[in-house]
Length: 107
Image 1 (cartoon, rainbow, N blue to C red):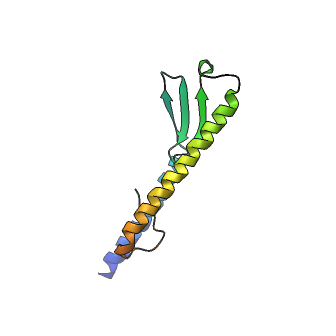
Image 2 (spheres, rainbow, N blue to C red):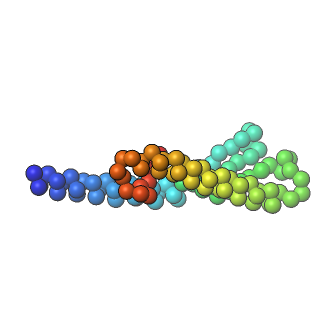
């Protein structure tokens, strides 16, 4: 019985290390979304961090750089708010389960 628990603990530790490694890889993986037939593109990591926005010059006036920077900031602000909202919502759900506070569920 003790050997089974020890083996189970080793498997859990191995799985935890693999999940951590996958999360680190995803943090550096970038994807690009496009809209308007390629007139607007957005570069984002798989951790939902916007890295850049490109807007075709035909869509703007003279201050393209400022508009792109503002769009990046707005997307990042929205993503942080979404994450906080999800965390707040699920923390109430897990409170009655006897799980430790601050537990990050994979939702």
